[in-house]
Amino acid sequence: MSDVGSPVDGALAVAAIVLSLLVAAWALVATLRQRAPDRVQLIGLAVLELLLIGLAVLAGVALAGGDQPGEPGAFFGYLVTLVCLPPLAAVLARMEPTRWGSAIVCAICLVTPVVVVRLQQTWELLGG
Amino acid sequence: MADPRTTPPSRTTPPARTTPPVRTNAGPGRLLIAVYLLFAIAATSRAGLQIITRFDEAPLAYLLSALAAVVYIVAAVGLARAGHAGRRVALACCTVELVGVLGVGAFSLARPDLFPDETVWSGFGEGYGYIPLLLPVLGLAWLWKTR
Picture 1 (spheres, rainbow over the protein chains, first blue to last red):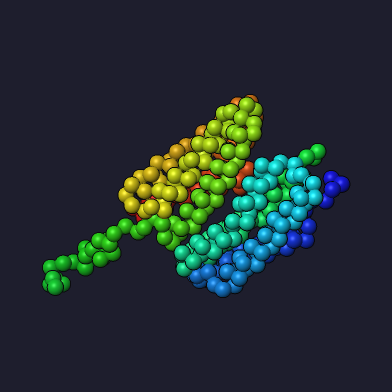
Picture 2: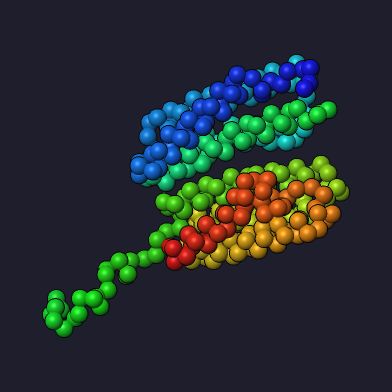
C-alpha cells in the first residue's frame, strides 16, 4: 500500500460503484418486465454522473497538489471514459424507448464499476 | 377475396412475410451497438496508448489490439447504418472478429512467447470477461435474425 492516499479510492468511489450496480439492477428488472427506461434510471444516471465528476475533481485536486498517477496515460483515458459513460447511457436510453433501452442502461451501469476499479489500479501501479 | 375452398388455409402466407427486413439498429440491435461502442472505445484507447508508449515491447500484440479496435468501430458503424451495405460490413466484421478471437485465443495459449502483453483477444478475451468471444456470435445471430 502506498503511503500517499489515492484520490480515487475513497467513499465517493464506493458510492459510485454501489449506485451504478443499483441502477443496473433496477434497469435489469425493467428489461425483464419489458419496460422502457423510466425516471428512476435517468435520475440514477444523473446522480452517478455527479459522483463521477466529483471523483474527477478529487483527482484534479490531487494532481494540482503534486501527486502523480502510476500510469498517467491510462489513468486519464479511464477518467475521460468514465465521465462519458452515464451521458452515453442516457442518450441511448432516450433513443430506444423500449425494454432494450433499459438493457443498454443495465449494460453500461455494469461496465462503470469495472472502469472505476481500473481507474484505481492505474493510479496505484507505481511501486506496486 | 379468394374463395376459401380454392386456397388451403395451411398454405396461405401470412402478411408478415412480405414486410421489409427488421432494421439492425433498433431494439436488441441498439444494445449490441452500445456494447460494440464500449469495446471500440476500450480497444482504441488501449491500443493507442500501447503503441504510443511502448510499441517495441510487443509489436504483434499491439498491432492486433489496433486491428481489433478498427474492427469494433467498423462493426458498430455497420450495424448502426442498417442498410444493405451496413449489413455486409457488419457481417464481414463479425466474421473477422470471430476468426480473430478464436485464432488469437488459441495462439496466445499455444505460443505465449509471441504475446508478451495482453490483447483484447488473448485467451479468448478472458481479460474482458469473454465478451469479445460472445460479441461476434451475438452479432452474427442478430444479422441472421433480421435478414
